[in-house]
Length: 259
Image (cartoon, rainbow, N blue to C red; front, top):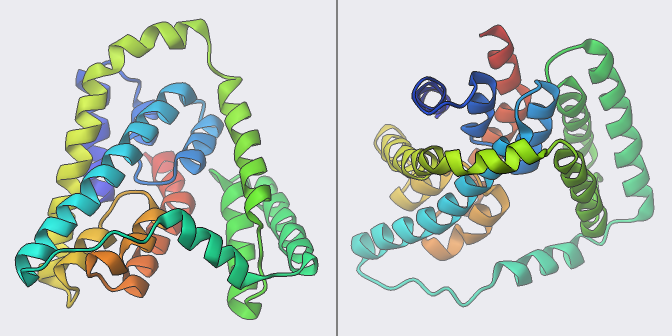
């Protein structure tokens, strides 16, 4: 998946007029907010990165479930029922967790400590990576890490404001030049999902729906919630998607720095 992303970034930077740092992050198979904030640290064009990442996410969420559904129906000769709504599942998850304010306080303190250490480490994206690693370790040990949905939305708002503050009139005018990069993103990531998915299917014991959803280059929470309805193994898909997200935030910036 990483190799395929680098191929797309090479094509984008050498043939479509996007600078190489922006193309690296525009083709990264990670979260929109995570990648855009890391791109900000690397002095990439964050407005272009955010737009192309949004296009990638929309194409993935639109294509992957549809393609997986068709493959599952063909293999099992039955229809998939989509009556469950992702929004209801998320609300239910929030109610079941029922975490305390104490858990939130611990989560924030540990995240801040990790972020400070990451900042002074001077590693690429160290602030975000260390904060994530510290909180993840805390949650693995105690199962008490908690971030309520309203706070998540607030943090995303601040992140969006940070990215928006970098947008200039020149960036807006330049959007008309992104038609070909957008086409490359849509076709490239859909093709990557199919190729990596079938590779996983042949190389592992994953079922075809599980392999295709595990290979999805984005939409971790959405894809994980859809997994059971699409005939996939939910825990396996969630684990693979989580590993992808961890790798992209923690390792991808280091690879780019070395290049």
